[in-house]
Image 1 (spheres, one colour):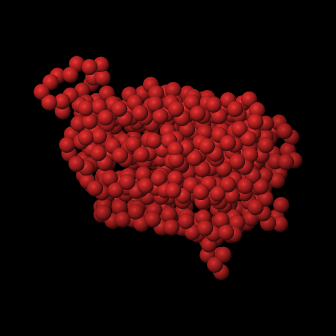
Image 2 (cartoon, rainbow, N blue to C red):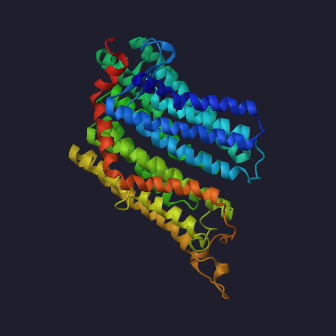
Image 3 (cartoon, rainbow, N blue to C red):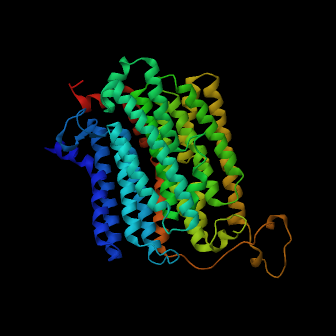
Length: 521
């Protein structure tokens, strides 16, 4: 009975947000406080259920829920294993913090007149799409999950209806539609060749297909997920799309949505195409993603754009771990995904606090925040150092796992990627240190008593510093998110061991296939 109850919980993170979104649409623009309570309650329940699922699968193996009672491969199933529940727990915690931040921001934000009935259902639909993507055991259901993501994220991206947001939303939608078309073509080819879209059954049937067909399907699916994850050279759309959105949307987009694409690549390469010929291509792609992203970050003078480019560069670390096709490399990739979701989301939320206090995210206009807003300064400094990989933080530990896996793999290309990873880490530190020096440490001109300073550091616009304190309700979710990122350092031992077990289960493949199909192969 307990096992059946646990299996029934697998669908809760997908169905509960959708149900709550429907209720909130029915409420409309009325009862905004009730709307907020529904959102926070829904995400809290999803987090609790995700933790229960993680404990259950770590102890007893993958759990499967067959939707509508139809067994796989006839019907669609949701599969919870160590990898899916790990990312589900972290994404649930992150989205809860972001929703708490957005609730605090919405009560006194008057610059956009969009009703809460638009923002909250869109957010919950997006959350349901994320959970569906993580738990999907069927490629067509994975396509549906991405479409849910698109519908919810477009609402968030264009929230407020400004010209820049509509333009960014159009770019984002065009990118998503192109990738969706490629995805559908890949699904059609896959079904024509194998007669199924169940990932567990595909893992068995792909072994009997001609290599050319397998390679075609793998490359097409990789193209789809590379666009979703903003992997080089499919990443040009991201820096111009994410920074225009409201702070909560930008934070969850940057921290979470790109990782859905990375997760799909991990599942694809480990379950469907283990040890395939694309590993070398993925290494070159990882190298390009690291270097182009971090060089773009160094050149930026806006906080949001700088963080968007660091987001791109650090996706390269995850792709590197996948490309190694080893348990150690996959464990490093899984650990880094968990770390990066939390840290990147926290940095974008802090940037939202900065924009709320000063009215800008331009580094050339900021200054003196260390003196006028010490809490914001600390909240930015801690995850920024974590992102840069300063020991003993989780960013350093994740990079260390990947470096060790790369050196253990041997060969000139993994060695080159290890070197590129170290260079990327140093340049990330330089980019955030430069930003810190100008936005936080630099003393604005008006604070320098009685004298005019003519210095090269003041070329550009005048720094903008206000003295208006932010409400505690806005800062508290950011504090919680930064603390969550630090907890990965404190719990690095158990977390890295769990990542190792998740990677071992991934590479073994048999536990996943047996849980879904049993004797039906």
